[in-house]
Image (tube, rainbow, N blue to C red):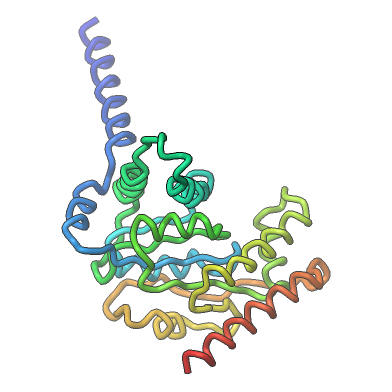
Length: 256
């Protein structure tokens, strides 16, 4: 009888520890430290899925305090710019909702629950595939513009070979549309393009990510994995791919 009671107590303690771990923000202390700074030093990674963005973030997080990887917060973030604009309408001055507190609460929620990185060269790397421009604008409202924005790209045939394997239960048109939507957001958000190709090496990543210093970091090994599926690409996808490349070339020429 006593043994059974002890087992029940042990089980309750175990369940309580699990509940506590689930409900206690993991990075609140880190967020409190970041609040002392004048601005958040953060990087953004976006683009279509299956473009090597996850591996890129694995490298960046070795130099970051915190990282967020595809949390899918679009339903929360995307409406925010519209609400902020509506707030400026004199006809809506009767609405006393505290938008600044709302943004602060979302920011605290993200930073409190972000994953711990392995460095301190930047505060946060935030990665989201198919990042909607309105969601991006909401992030900027919270944290200011990112210090660096990276857009991950892959040519359509290689993307389709990878995406149809990864999302085998998704209809072909949806897989194609994900690529089109992801590439369409390069124009309004922008970023330094990193194209995932068979010729890449780990040294290419290290060079591209400068000024981050990855020396003496334990970096995951890199081997390009991928095939090509030209058959299931569309002319629209190829046009989108070349449009992104052309826009990037035009921006680079203006900077030069």
